[in-house]
Image 1 (spheres, rainbow, N blue to C red):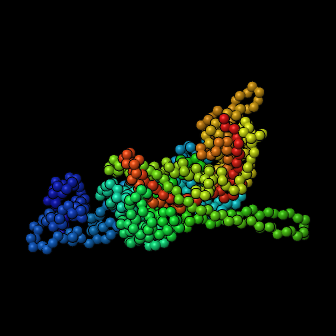
Image 2: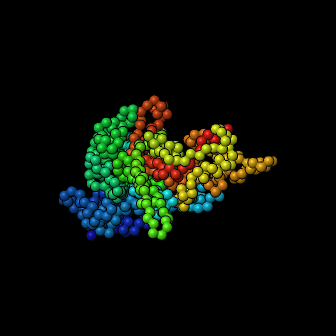
Image 3: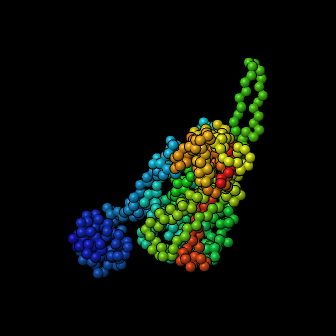
Length: 533
């Protein structure tokens, strides 16, 4: 019977890093780990732990099961007898705290859920019925934005290293902890993206199957196609079949754990000027979202006994189709950094992705062209055009802001509670509004007050997106905008080229797909030709 004898304890303490104060259970667990890691022979452990001399005639080295007794497997990690190998998740903090708004989403005068220090959230919807004007039934779910756990960040870093090494022949080094983290992710986590078979999709998040784990560890989940590194574009994807994602540009997406995919947009959700107020719809398949909008029926009053005409349902239900567009985010890192591959590698990658997406998602919502990117407010159909006071390029007056906001009629302004209705324009235009004075002779006090940092015009928040054309301002209920997010990311590492070589850098592309547009034109009014000099 194997036990934690003094002989076994002394040798493990002297030669194999066992703490002197270790319990008997920890002695046996440490011995088991050393056997599995081939740092000590099972015969040697038997010799020391049973206080019996080793049998010179013994044939071969016994297995850990023969030494410790047969046990069971839990969570992909073997446990035998009363000796338990600690799973990876117990070596890290798995706590997920709720993120807090930083204050960029609202002015100081704006009371409500977006104030600095309050729990951050986003509005998630499912594909299906779109908005109705002034609806009383809430079809979106308010979901908290959670900070990633230490364990998730560690796995993100390890998976990113593995992908870079596997597909890009990267010089990043995987240590033993990285390898265990990757194994934990592919065995225990739920994934999204294409499966290992041709045209197979992992739509709803689920655990990988055995052959999918093998595909990820070897060639990646690319429908069984070989994925080759090299060339000026980093990857040769000419032999990857397009039907995997109905996308002839990339030919497919790399499957990733669900938390990996969401972390790419968590930061812009939290810190964006526009995106926290819109509705986000995750969708797991296809090249477009096909849905519909429903209008508002009309009631008719008549004298008693008089017949009425049936409500004309022409255009009562209209189609609402959104195309998904590929979007890439570039991250530069130095080759020296890559050689070291810091422990917080995953956190650095996620922060970089967030910095890029923070700008990009707001840009789509404001000015996206709808042809190569999601359609923004500037190009939405059916929006209300409000004419500035006087002739073209007039001097701005108070009524310009008033007329613009009231260009969005009350049912649209007050829909979804009205808390997401705001002005949207550039920082330069906000300054122009704050310069407006009372207009009373001799009274130069600014009509919107002196609190420049509030970004508030009267009762309405002023959101900033600096790609909007000079002199253009929107009033919009942003909950009327829906952003569709295709599940899944993939990476492309570019290592060649004079600029990258001279800078001793590499360029990592993270690629995803989004679609979006305003659900009904009435949610947005637009004014142009305002003077900004």
